[in-house]
Length: 389
Length: 35
Image 1 (cartoon, chains in turn cyan, blue):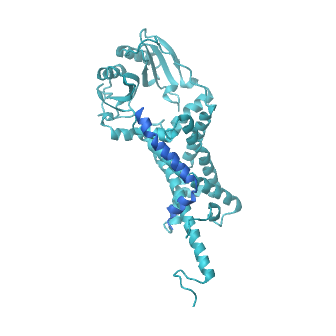
Image 2 (cartoon, rainbow over the protein chains, first blue to last red; image 1 turned 180 degrees about the vertical axis):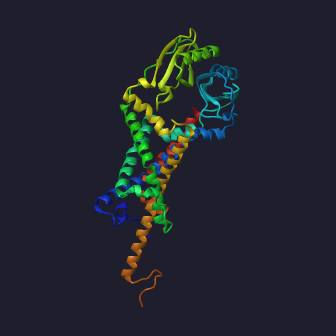
Image 3 (tube, rainbow over the protein chains, first blue to last red; image 1 turned 90 degrees about the vertical axis):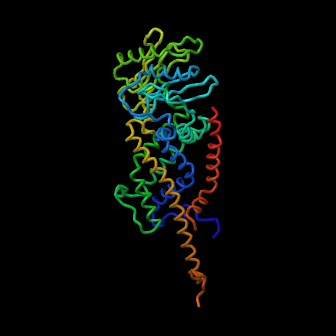
C-alpha cells in the first residue's frame, strides 16, 4: 500500500445525505488538520485548571497544615521583609485553597522574580521558589505558546473559530443528538466503539465546548484591539522616591479601614507600592463572575487616607463581558468542585480531538481494505493471493 | 494499516506547521525561565 490515501471527502460515510455530508467533511477536515495544535491547546488548558494543585504537589514550600488562626496581612508582609529584606514585594495573594500557603511575588535586587510562600496561620515564611512553575508553564503554553503575547494570543484564540465550526457541524451530522446522552458505547468493532465514545463525549461536552469557544472568541476580539476600555484607575500614594518597604502596621490599619468602609470586600491580594507609601487591596465583593481586580481600594499608607475605589458592580456591559471571560474560561468562580468539573470536561475536549483523529485513521483503513477487496474481486485473486482455478 | 499512521499522513503539510509551532514553544521555555 502506498502512502497516498483517500482524502477526507472520499472516506466520509457514504450513507450520509448531501447536506450532512458537507458538514461531515467540514468536521473531519477541521478536526484532522488542526488536531495537533488543538489537542496541545486543549491539554495544556485542561492541566492549567489544576496548575496550582500540581505546584502544590511539586513544592513543599506551598504545603501548610490547616488551622483556625489567621496571621494578618501585615504580619505576613513583615515575615517576608524579615526573611528577605532586600527583596521588593509586588503583591501578596491569599492562599489558593485550604492547605495552601499565601504567595508573594517578589523581585530580588538582581531583578529576578521569586515567589515567597507564607503560612497564613503562623505567619512564618515557608520558603521561596522560582517564578517559573507548573502554573506559569501551563498558562503561558496554553495562552500564547510562550511567544510574544501579540503573536501568541491571536494565534491560540483563533482556534475558537474551528472549535465553533466543529460544534455546529456536529449538530448537523448527529441528528437528534440528545438521544446520545444515554447511549453507552457498543463494544462491537473498534470503529463503532470509538465512534460511540466520540459521540458520547461530544454530546455531554456541548455546553463546555460552546463556553470555551465563545470565551476564546472574546480573547481573539480582545487581542485584535476591540477589548473593553481599561478599568478605572485606583490611585495609591506614591512619592516617586527611592524604593522602600511598606510598613506592616500601616498595612493592617489600611486593611481594618477597608473592612469598615467596605464590609463586603473579601480581600484576596495586597499590592504595596514600590516606595512603600501606597497600598491597593483587591478581591471579591459580591459581584458575580468578575476578576478580583474588579473590586479594588487604594490607600495612602502614611496618612491612612482612602484615595480611590472601584467596584465590579459599577462596570459597563463591555467591561463586564471582559471580566466574565476569565472566570468562565478557567472555571475559577466556584471553588474546587467547579475546577474539577472544568478539568474533567477539558479532558473530554482533549479526548474528542484525539478520538476524532483515531476515527479518521480507522475510516481510512476500512476504506483501503474495501478498495483492496474490490480490486481482488475484479482480478479474481483472493486474500491469500491465490487466483481462480 | 495502523490508523494512527494513516491519520498522521492524512494531516498533510499541516502536521509540520503545528510541530514547528510546538517546537518553537518548547524552545522558548529556557528564555521564560531565565526572566
